[in-house]
Image 1 (cartoon, rainbow, N blue to C red):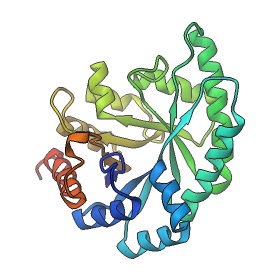
Image 2 (image 1 turned 120 degrees about the vertical axis):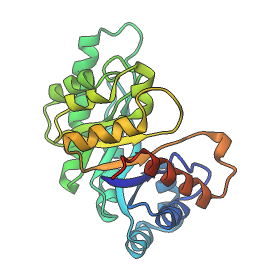
Image 3 (image 1 turned 180 degrees about the horizontal axis):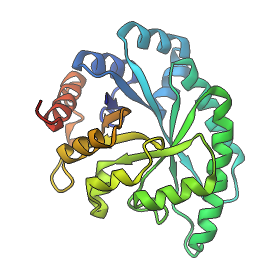
Length: 252
């Protein structure tokens, strides 16, 4: 398991601050939040980010989030994914998290499945030359992504080897899905797992125990995007995130 800090947890802070705080808290990787990446590249340049990551020994678990519309337009989205994949490769990353938007009202589920699978296939084709994969984010509010099995159907319909899944604890809780259902996902298609704080099943302990049982070795990212904690120093936010992850780990 690779310990990871999500940029959504530290929204008010910049990307350089995320990298430094993650390193200080003992994280191995970060999820690079898209708006922060775009601002950093504009102000400082991608090479400076690559140098900072290398200096502090922080890996890039993903670039996120990248919306994927379920409408006829796709050209701008594909170009955005291609640029993101090129940036990911330059900083040692190989994963982009795609966030499919819900289908328009009145669209039949089978039509939405076909259209979205095609959109994802085009995005995966755009990212592949850079050696970058696309992880589709599970979403409790999306009819095609609210359940790991449903999300797998979308991935299989797209039929692309560079497409996998990103699953979040918050989404599992929202839909009442137990941790054991992570075992429904082929291990070679489960590319990112996010955990958060709060009450309700499944617990972080249950998630991490299940991940160990199925042999998951990827990133487990702490994502707690709540404004009531954003006034804290970023070092404290990162330290609390690491503590949350450590408390969820099973005892030796």
